[in-house]
Image (tube, rainbow, N blue to C red; front, top):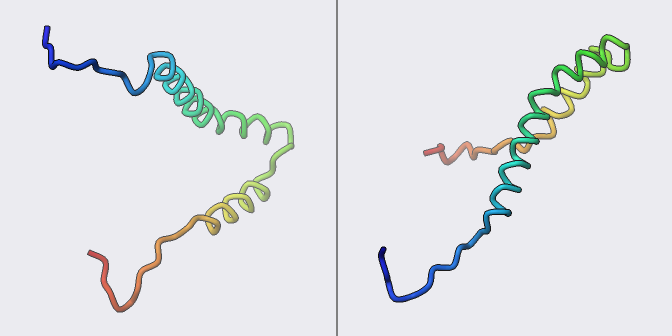
Length: 75
C-alpha cells in the first residue's frame, strides 16, 4: 500500500510479544490469588497474624523512600 523505499524490520516478534503478555497475565493472576492462599494457610495454622504483621512491617521499612532536602522544596 505505502512504499517508503526501504524494508521495515520489526523490533519484536509475535512470539516474544505473546510470551510477554502471558508472563504478565500469570504474574498478575498469582498476585490476585495470594490473599486466597494466605487465607487457607492461616486456616491450617501455617501462617499466623503475628507473622504476617512482622513481614508487612519489614517490607514497609525496606522500601526505598524518596528523600527530600529541607532546603530545596519539591517541584
